[in-house]
Image 1: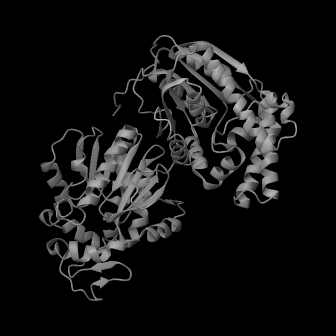
Image 2: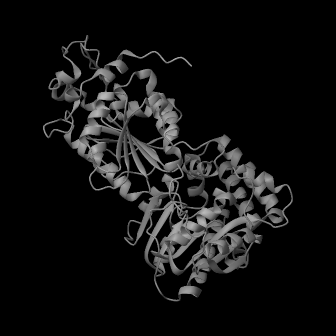
Image 3: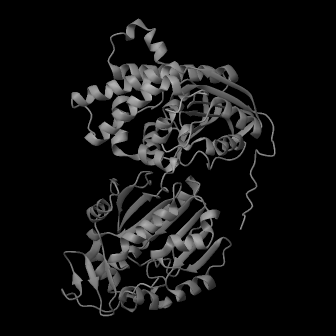
Amino acid sequence: SEEPELHDETQLWKDLSVDSWKNSVRNKDSVFYDLYNDTRRRIIEACHKHTYDVVVEVGCGTGEVIGFLEGTDTPRIGVDINEDFVNHCKATYKDSGLEFHVADAMRLDEWWTSMGYDKKYKAPLMVCPNNTIMIMPEEIRDTVIEKMRVVAGIEGRIVVTYWNGRMFAHGVMGYYRKNSDLCGTFDLTDEHVDWENKKIETRTSYKSEWPTTQDVCRWMASLHIDVDVAEPELVNTLEVDHIAEVGMGVYLWLKGVSPANDAVGSARDYYDNKDSQTFYKTVWGENNTHVGRHDLVAEDPEMANADLCTKIRKAQELQEECFMANVKSHYGGAKVRCMDMGCGYGGLLRNMARNDMIWSAVGVDISGEMVDAATRLSKSNPALTFYRESYMNTSVPADGMDLCISSEAFLHVGPGNHEAVLREAWRVLRPGGRLIFTDIVGHPSAPPEAKVLYERIGLQSFQTVEGYFETAKKLGFGELSFEDHSENVSTHYGTVLEALEELWEKKEINIREESKDRMVDGLTKWRDLAPSCLQWGLISMRKLEQTEHSILDETPSF
């Protein structure tokens, strides 16, 4: 294929000298010094808090960000279109685990694959700081954002920092005027400075623009990316896709793009969806979203005339009581170190903490919406910590947990990934520790109609209880048990369906009609097919001995 025509700004970037760029942001007298340090802090904290296995800076320049991430041993890769910049970085930064390459951001995904990095890294943190994206030609910016998201994938994330349009005048006088050797000379006239649209073009054809928070919101909306606007000057970084104004900068944090037909990515995107969040919070309440013990609700005469949402929440509460009773049957009154795999809103961990069962606990979930809510709802309990991570690849140290728990989370990744799920539980559990979880599984004699259900959530099949047990034994788990409460599945989905339709009729749930229709269709199928196709209950297993399959050889294969 023909090479694309090189844009004049791109050529400018390629020809820019190292000396003119180096230290223009990092100097203490730079107007961007505080933003520079805050950007580095957030990247370092993100590496400590998550399982990002590499940091990739797109448009690394002379390495003032990627080269100064002190305090993290996460591998780092800087890429830039300017060969002189890359050679400077190679000569300047000698840290192990830090490398630099010439690469075109427009073809970032192709380059990533050609280097074999798609096999080596699972969770890249892609960074593009210092308004680099706005110095790129306007017509390529959308593509660069998309390529960064593609490389980030399901478990990674991207962060882009813009120079804050509300501070444009300060930047013109405090940065561009002081760095004419970098940016070129200009007059304070309409020929060079567009004050209204926050744009500058110097005599050397250097161009830049400074967007406001609202500008970035509109830009993301044009790409059909839904982002929240965080409070200005927010110190902590949220896990949801969001925009945050901090001093001279505007941060944009986005999750990566999941491959087509990927069950894990589909589940993450579903739970991060605003209508899904509204649905769960309105019907279940902001606590948990799992199947409940409707059989026990039916036995309670006081619940006979309760409204549907109250019955759903009571069934959930009774299920958690039964779950905790099972845990206590193994641990007695001892407090445990616990990891919740797919923690959702974190309600089960909070319930266990209220019942004095938790010494310390970590909840992990792939959904940023869920993790932010869990963190907010658990502020009063310092023993509980929540991370946005895949439960197949957590940052929890090996052999550090007494107990791993989960509630209907494992089905979302499908049987093909369940060995990885159980292996991660095996890794973090101490010898003798237990994995106790509920899950919706396929009935061993399910009819072909079950395909309707598992294909709705991007799976090729459902796991079975026996399938879990076979995998568990292969990895060194024993003392396997299944407590069957399958009769609750159809009742659960039927009750949720009725509640949704009632709330919609009364105009008491604020979701789009297309979302409501899709939910009604799905809930109807789950209600009607559950008796013949599905099982549900509590599965328990204990870590006994290591086998040849318990730990994977992580030596790279390339």
